Every structure is written in C-alpha cells, then in structure tokens.
Image 1: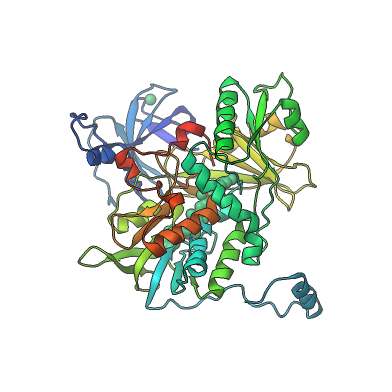
Image 2: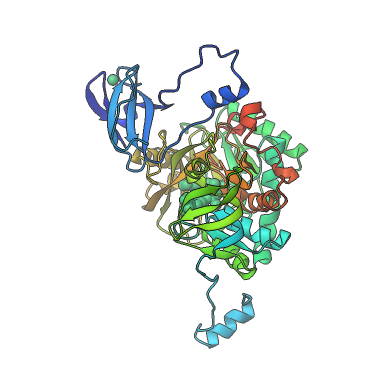
Length: 96
Length: 417
Ligand SMILES: Cc1cc2nc3c(=O)[nH]c(=O)nc-3n(C[C@H](O)[C@H](O)[C@H](O)COP(=O)(O)OP(=O)(O)OC[C@H]3O[C@@H](n4cnc5c(N)ncnc54)[C@H](O)[C@@H]3O)c2cc1C
Ligand SMILES: [Zn+2]
C-alpha cells in the first residue's frame, strides 16, 4: 500500500483513501469537435506510460475529495513530489 | 531433438538419467537474422516456432532480457477460456483453444492443458443478463458456454457456497467446459525447445536497448546489451514493456502498464475440480496439479513497472475467496507475486503491422493473454512472414484507436483475464 501526501490536507495518508486518476497534464482540446481523428487519438488514447518518472493525477476521494498531481518513479513506486492541480510540472532530476 | 516418450523415460531410468540433452541450445547472437523477436514469453517463443514450422523462416532469434517465461507467462494463473462476446474475440480465442487441444503432441512437450471447465459466477441481475447475452453470442460463434442454476453449479464444484445468506449469493453461473488451465512454464519451454530444434536461436540475458531504423525509416536491427544485431523484421512481444520498446522506434502506443498480483496456498490433496471466476466479488481460483490453490487478484490502480502491488488488493481477493468457499478460511498462503500487464483502452490486444516498415507488434494482452498464447503466436507469425495480417487478427490493429473500430471487451465483460 502506497503512502500518499495530499497537498491540500498536507498529510501523508494510506493509498486506500485515494483514487488514481490517470496521466497528468493532458489538456482537453478546446475545439474538440474540430480536431482530426489523429489529434483525438493522441489526446484520448495515447499515453506515455514511462518506465521511470511519471506525472499522474490522484484524487483524495475519502478525504478532501480534491484532485491533485504527483511525480512518481514507476520502477520503485516512490513519490518524488505531490502538488496542487493547476500548478506546472515541477522540474525534477532524471526527467526524461 | 531427442523425442520425449514413455520409452525414453524407461531407458533413462536405467541409465541414471544421464542421457537427457539440453532442451534448447544457447548460442551467441549472430550478426544478423531474417527476423528478431523481442521477448521470450509464450507469445514470442510461439511466434518463432510458427515462423519456422508454418513459414519455413528459421533464421530467427528470440531475444529475452531475463529468462524464458520470467515475464507474465511464468506469473499468470493460467486460466484458459474463449467465451468472449465479440465476433473478433471469439475467432481469436477459439483459434487458441483449438491449438491448445493438440499442443502437447505438436510440441512433443507436456503443457498439461487440462480442460476442467471454467465457471463464472453470477451474483445479481446484471450478471445474469450479461452472462446470458454472452452465452447466446457464443453459441452463434460456435463457442461452448452454458447456463447453470446454483444447484448445478454446486454439483459441478462442490466446495462452492450457494446459500442465499451469503453476502453475494450465487444466483447462477456460466460454464465453458472446454476452458481450463495449462502449465505456464511448460508452454514457454515447449515452444523454445521445438523452435530451437528448427534452427531458431534462443538468446537469454540479452536486453534490447534500442531499435535501429534506416534513412527510409525502415527497421535495420536492434541494439542490445550483447551488441548490435541486424534484421529487416522485428516483432515486439514484450507485454508490460511494450510502450518502452515501441518508443525506441518512435511509435506511440495506447497502453498503460499496471501491476497484477496472484498467490498460491500450501499444497493440499485434490479439493477443487475446476476453475471458478467471480467478477462481481473479484476473485478467481483453481488448484494446480501440485495441489496449491492458485488465486488471482485484480490490478492495482496505478501504473508501475515494479512487479509488486499493494497488499490490500490481495486481502480483498482472499476475503472474496473465503466468502465463496468457507472451507478455505484456514488455508495458509505460501507465496504472492506480481506481473506487469499492458492494458489497452478497449481491453483487446494489438496484433499488427505498425507505421514503421519491418516493425510488428503483439501487445496489449493485459490481464488475460495466456489463454491466447498458441493462437496469438500462430497469427502473429503469419503477419510477420507475409507482411499482412491473418484474417483472424485483421481487426486487431493499432489504427483502430484512430478510426474508432474498437473491440470493446472492456465494456462487454469488465473483468480481469
Ligand atoms: C498475476 C497474473 C495473472 C494472470 N492470469 C491470467 C490468466 O489466468 N489467464 C490468462 O489468459 N492470462 C493471465 N494473465 C496474463 C498473461 O500472463 C499474459 O497476457 C501473457 O502471459 C503474456 O505473454 P507474453 O509472452 O506476451 O508476455 P511475457 O511472458 O511477459 O513475455 C514478455 C517478455 O519480454 C521480455 N522483455 C521485456 N523487455 C525486453 C527488452 N527490452 N529486451 C528483451 N526482452 C524484453 C520480458 O522479460 C518478458 O519475458 C495474468 C498475468 C498476471 C501478471
Ligand atoms: Zn486531501
């Protein structure tokens, strides 16, 4: 079970309180009706799925219920940082 | 290749078992091959075997970063069935079931395919409707699947608790009698031995670190921890690592890799005659020939390459198992482990050519590809050899996520494996 730091509650809580919510920093196109099938595929289906540093969304569903972002290493499952939704991708060592 | 037979066993018993040759040879990699297969799991080794046997292409190498079957092939709970909803799925998984039936003879290797029946439990009205829909669709596709009442289910699997007082009472079940299990390692080893015998080079401890492309974009070979190797055709069959490998060739794929865990109990005498799955309470169970109960859990919620998952997932599964089979509440669990499964948005695999000339991919099997191993390998070999898909895998393209022609088993089943 992962221990996750919620940046809103400012507390480390067990994973059971959280729901993973997919890759972070994927912006929904503003003009979704006009984009090409290729652009829609890239937005909707393609994922970077990195072995190493991933940026992902979590939701503190059984706590404050808010969405936030995390940077995690998918090889060790170690969290490098969690940060509030809307904040830019943090620059971290080993980003690739 | 020395043929395995009852006679060979008797002869070796008299000679102190000194005459068994190695099952496959382990040559140094050559400078170049006609085809390189990346990944020494069942699907990759099977592909190499069918390339040699069906298409006469024997200048082939299988490159495996660890040991044969050390990926999901050797970590899975070996449930085999073909009662999927859609026509495309029925064709692919039923192709596999037909090959399973004769695989031990074909490979001269006992893969211990045991058609002991796979029973899926229904716990509520929704399950009943979905399963009956599957049964009808399966019948139209020539796939066996039948409806059982709770009493019939209990007769088929006596340890099952069917009391109405259960937290999730059993209200019926769908049974595929041709479903069952097989010995996972033997599938990898049997294909490796038979492929090696036909001239395929099986190369372990050889990790692919790069995929080379020429000025025209076409594949020219791979870079590995044992040096560069040339080939005009490369097949990526790397399960949880498919995204990593495809990115080496600049192809973006719609995959995410999740941990999936399983566990086994201490071995006991035969107590459990078939395979039982319950999607609603999320548990599946069978008994191996060694006597261990083999229990599968669900995926973890986060992506990972760690080959471990959260303990809470196992706990949840064991609670469900004890609810369904109260006689197992005092069993001790021996081992648990995780594999990394590559999941597509529609929960169906990708078995196809790619936009890169000479690059082919067999991935996206997620939580349920073991059952498909012979069928997948057979049609993938065809795809590589002919540079066009077999009719059975023609719909399993990468492009379907652009065109919208999904094979949406996710919505149809919403289950693991
Ligand atoms: C716990 C668990 C339970 C499961 N239960 C079932 C079940 O009951 N029924 C079912 O049908 N399916 C089940 N599955 C799914 C099934 O195991 C897989 O779909 C199937 O085995 C995939 O086979 P494969 O040959 O494609 O992959 P793998 O066996 O994983 O082989 C891929 C190989 O590629 C190698 N590789 C990766 N990267 C590189 C590289 N860079 N260079 C060289 N080699 C590389 C890996 O080491 C690995 O050996 C389960 C999976 C898990 C984890
Ligand atoms: Zn919170």
